[in-house]
Image 1 (cartoon, one colour):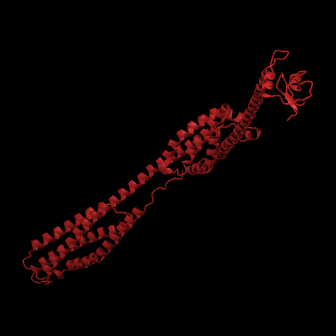
Image 2: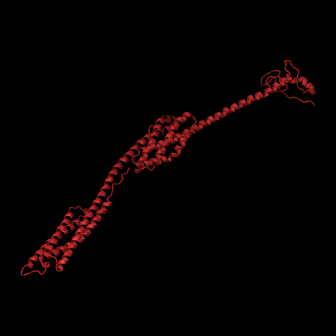
Image 3: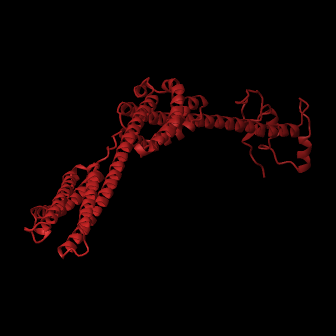
Length: 436
């Protein structure tokens, strides 16, 4: 069967050609189909295998056989395809690289914007709050406000450290890291109080370090910001101002608290001394009261014995007893007069002293009554049947009754006065802690 060829290949470059073409449209070679047409079988019968092989090995005018030209043509096809494919790969790599570069630029820009926005927000807060730092409570307010910004500052810090461009990262990341460290330190002073002022001093070291870093980074940071952000970056060292004012607040607070503690300590000591003095006084007074009541009991016992007839009691015994009773009462009275009672017990204290004085005077009348009766017993006309009938003894009895009635009320009043004095001392207010 006879077949018809519709195309061939250029002998120079290997480009596929249509039969009948007088030149190659790729390389421009003329007569590119002479050899191809000679080999065509479109108008001839198909030769045998032996004839075809012999024809393929016949040299042409240029000395090349059809077989060699065909091999060259076939070899030319994959080389060109490789060149085209390689160029495509390079182009694709360039395009992909450009896309990656563009995306990195976009990511860096977004990261820079995020970081700068967080720093600007924190700086704006510091600008407002640092002027309001007057007391410890103001530091707590700042700490709580800055604590609310920690998430955005953390995001900004991460964004700054993730910038791929070294120059941009070096301009922003130090400030972002410093502001994050400062905000973290400030947030830890949320519970700052008069009892924990030392916490500020420990955190202020971090703040001072962060402020130094911001001071160094600020010029580079401002050049990185755009016109809108520039307004948020005033040329002031806000964190440095916060540290300075915070130190002043804490120092003043510490001084006030120290003065208060000294004053309070003195007041507590005064209370302690007052209570101790009251206790000592009350104990001494109770001792004297007990002694006096013992004297009253012994005097009453002696008088009862005398009233029953006075058997075994001589006048000397009676005079000696009365004299001793006077001396003992006088000693108690002197001891009480030497004491300093509290105001609340002063009246009752004086009442007991006076009562004992009356008792001493009454014993003088008792002594005189014995003398009157002794003198009357030696007379022929006795006026008294007993010493109790003498006027002086009658005065003694009257005054003793007065002492008895006043003594009990004086003691009760004195005990009430001691209780009131103790309550006043106990409830005496101590200086209140100043607001710092």
